[in-house]
Image 1: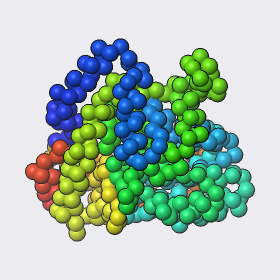
Image 2: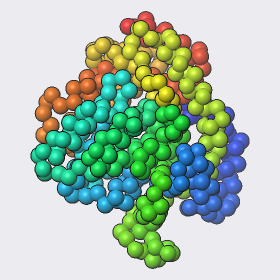
Image 3: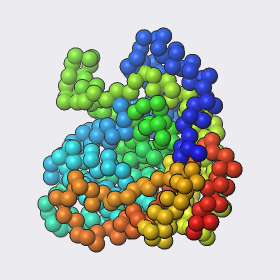
Image 4: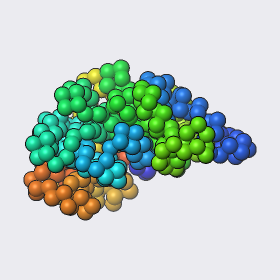
Length: 374
């Protein structure tokens, strides 16, 4: 059994993907070719924004946004404590300081009460200037943007949506990757919409920011390739990856998101009351980057993971360490009791195999072993 079966997906889509790769090889346009612009237009339409600018990976997408806003030394950027390292790494690379915020134990997303307390504390200390909130659509579920927006407006902050795991999710009628002032996603292979290497994109309705990010991704280009008007970076999406994504995007829209939601619903039906299953608030729709359960303590979680491995069932811990306890951020000197929900979840979460092509039999097998162990 595979945790996220990309080979099975390839076998289903093989004729179209093979043709897309061969056509790209024959075209000679290997970087920023025709497929890139076509993909950007399709993604922007799907998400519901004016601009989609593709780039080399999801980390660069976050970086492009921060650079467009001029974030740097002395600025505070508020980041969930329970996320992948890149969400904060990009802040530090721009010279700014990440301020880690606790999360909601049901949704795994940023807790707005903890967020506001962190903003007030930062203002009171007076060492940093609050500038940006990075929300993370963790495990496929969009954050509570309505509550976050109220706080952002109150303190005059920008919202950067890290939708690396959230593409395809939505809240009400608004799609993930349309919810921030700038939003981003990743096309890493295991993401809800993934390519066969690295790739990413930024989304915005702001014309000026879009122009700046389009320039930044190609060495700060101006009117043509050798007219460099700002210090930029080399972060272009390869045509081959765009061509692959075009094929996968059609499957994603047509049936993959629907099928992975059916898989998640079956998991919840089988496991509800046995372990704590994921919570999808009313009016929200997840693209299920992960299906993450909670156990009673670290001993039970680690024991279940070992037991599943013995049965040939893969599982993953996302994430074992809070951001504020990462070695790279030791100098921030967070108190031991910081962000208690994050600390507890790092010891109790376990993600089970899920993807659009998983069979009911495989889900039932996983659930039988989980129930048996618990």
